[in-house]
Amino acid sequence: MKILASFIKINTIDELLDNFFYQSLFSLATLKPEIHFYFIVNSSVDLKDHNHPINIEVLVTKMFLGMKLFKKLNTSTFLSRKIKSLQPDIFFSEDMLSYENINCRKFFRADYAEVMNNKKLKKTDRTNYIIAANEWVKNKWISENPLNEISILEIGEGVQAAEPLSFEEKIIIKKKYTEEKDFFVVHDVSSDNNFITVLKAYSLFKKWQQSSMLLLLLIDTKNKNAFENILSNYKFRADVTLVDKYMDDAIKITQTAYASLFIQDLYRITTHMLLALRAGSPIILPKSDYFSSFFKESGFYVVPNEIDISKAMILIYKDENYRNALAEKGYSEVKINTWPEVANNLWQVISNLS
Image 1 (cartoon, rainbow, N blue to C red):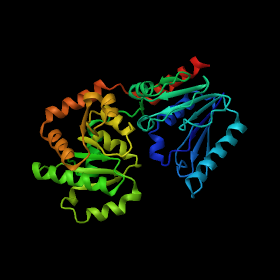
Image 2 (image 1 turned 90 degrees about the horizontal axis):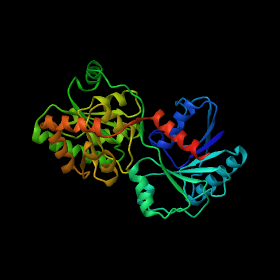
Image 3 (image 1 turned 90 degrees about the vertical axis):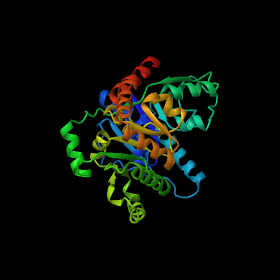
């Protein structure tokens, strides 16, 4: 069997590693070494330091830097040629509206963005299937799209099988980054505006609590200089640390944090959210039906402004019973599968449709 998967619309390694199609297929390749996988990625995604099972062949497409139309034509031509030459048995794609004439089973990814953009699928044959990461996405598609000829499947979210850190291991992380003090960790800060919002919220927190709680931000190093310039005149500069989010320690930092804050423009369930819950660390999230349907009472939901964020920080800090209850709900209420388990779910779907 040959499986071809296109991830061309993904522009960063971070997005790719949080993509449930990618992670489930990656794990499936490990479980099924007899299957040959072809992963097509955008040239902007750097996979040179990411080890793959030997049955995964990574194909890179170079995108035109010019007009959007030329990019689309170039991508479509590249994919069409690869599909024709490889003749895969199954094709996975992020793009739901193309490649309808491919003579194999086609699986398309449905996520929050596609649902909110209310994209419609054209009528097609029964070789098309929508894979939904979770029940919310699945139900949204069913309610908003009359997909009489297309099957909607759910395979669940996954998280890497990281072992919980021991107390001693958490002390090592605290010694390394915060002189053994407790800290909030902030994820997905990708713009100056988001960065400034977090700093303002932390200032309000420090004003009202006068605590030793520190602030760590996991960032892309390409933003480091800009963020350090903003920090240069910040009153609590000594209490703020910027950490490369691609470091091996990033996962351990998430597992050690007093609480994790997620400020993101693109709503998606990330590995770090699930790791935080598994480690018993509360998560603060932007208000949305998407997050609340999945995390339910295990998340603290805020409007992503300095007032709401600071109130969340203050409540979680000053009320330890509330924090512990939130952490306990996060660990017990949310069903978290490992990626191998999700891969098994996907394989069951493929096997039943064969």
